[in-house]
Length: 188
Image (cartoon, one colour):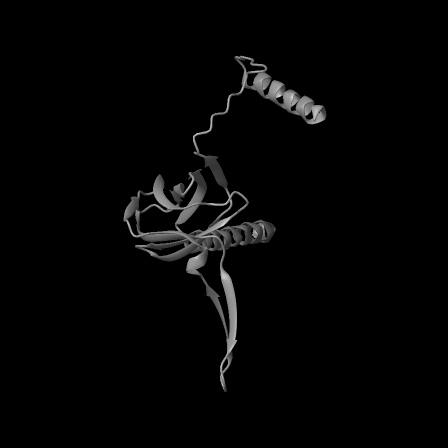
């Protein structure tokens, strides 16, 4: 029996470590917000923009969006009133607001949904936006930096096809793609 003591100790320690890691991992996954904004496509027009928000629900239950708003930035304030402790707060200004939407949407379990909202014109130099979302599971603030802006001003752009290749193999297509990227990098 004494010969197997070290083997049993090693196996029981490994089992305890796996149990601890499993509990920590499930706690971490449950603490994450259910909604994530995958990308934002903005159709810019002269006076307004259409925002197409692609939202992913990472939970195994449906989530209802009750209201949503989009801001270009958040502000931070520090205040100290007479004879009181200083206060720190995050604030959102309506002057930085692009849209406020009170329509209700449901996102299915582990699902993707795109939401279309009309709002103010978006400047093309903005790299990330803050979304505030009131859901059936609480209030969320989500930043999105994957923004695709498309100008819908009625201008037409024509592009010619310089080269096109057809392959039966994914490996050969990837090899040609990376070769053309490398050649294009040195041509500029």
